[in-house]
Length: 375
Ligand code: C2E
Ligand code: MG
Ligand code: MG
Image 1: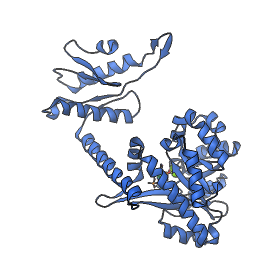
Image 2 (image 1 turned 90 degrees about the vertical axis):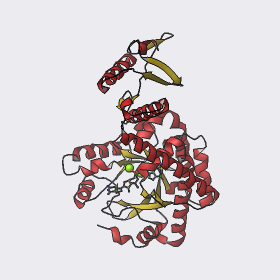
Image 3 (image 1 turned 90 degrees about the horizontal axis):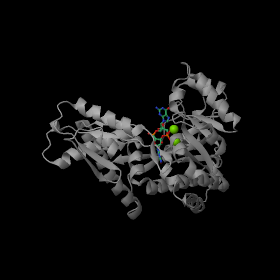
Image 4 (image 1 turned 180 degrees about the vertical axis):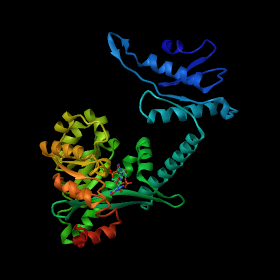
């Protein structure tokens, strides 16, 4: 409190709203740059380590700024918009500030709609057993043989009014609200069930591996592994037939909390894959310590193949192979990229060059007629 008070003028008000949220009311601000200056000062004073009982602690602050020129009639509206801007600042990384604008309000409203609709979707999923959620499947190819070795299950939401909503839009909302737990359970169950059905219907499906995305919130559930084994038992799927994809950034954020969970999953025989590799900040010691079987090189690197990024991909592949981990390239779109990846010794590929994610019926046709994808 004392530190922040030093940054503001005597006529300004500083208050605690609750928890770790504070508000500053700056009176008679002529230009927004004055508020920015104060925000900068607050960030600067709070960036120094604080001494607490002989311990040095570090803190940071995210700040949202709303200006009265937006025509507020009620104080709550000013606070609401400052709050929206603060959340935007938070999402841009720590220790930032953001100034509220109308676009943020539209975005916050649309996010709220997504959240409300998603709650109904989850309710329907479990109460009425009906749902606008679907899984589509994208084949994963062995680059050496051109054969489909498995599929990645990707969630699809077709909203009755808004149409297709991308998982990149609603998965973050599901994660923030905790709705990812029931949704994730449904995904796991549905993907395993689908694999079971293919195994029953086509001889070619016996060795397929189903890759399923799991979020950090799911992994942090203490009963996650036992839930997986229940699903495997209920769907009669062997643990070695599924691969869980965990995004690199999620694994790094939760690393210390999920070590035991990952060990239990390994014990169960489930394979683990590090998704979007190269976009987070991996600590190599984690790569070494965790029981990871596969790295998925992020699309952005595959995109750059042939235009200066070959070295990076080559290094990632060499690193993975050195640790006994195999590699899947994401987002393979051209035959040039494919040739490069083959030359670099990458084991698997996935991307529009082979097939985009398709519905279960089309995926089953791909399983039954694998020659279709051989390049
Ligand atoms: P991801 O796991 O990295 O999935 C790959 C994404 O790349 C998919 O996007 C896929 O449609 C897209 N893609 C595949 N090949 C190509 C290509 O050649 N070019 C381009 N430009 N894109 C390609 P999608 O389906 O929109 O999913 C986005 C992300 O949402 C996924 O990224 C994953 O992180 C998340 N997600 C999807 N389904 C689930 C789920 O069931 N649970 C969780 N927790 N996350 C999911
Ligand atoms: Mg994935
Ligand atoms: Mg990915």
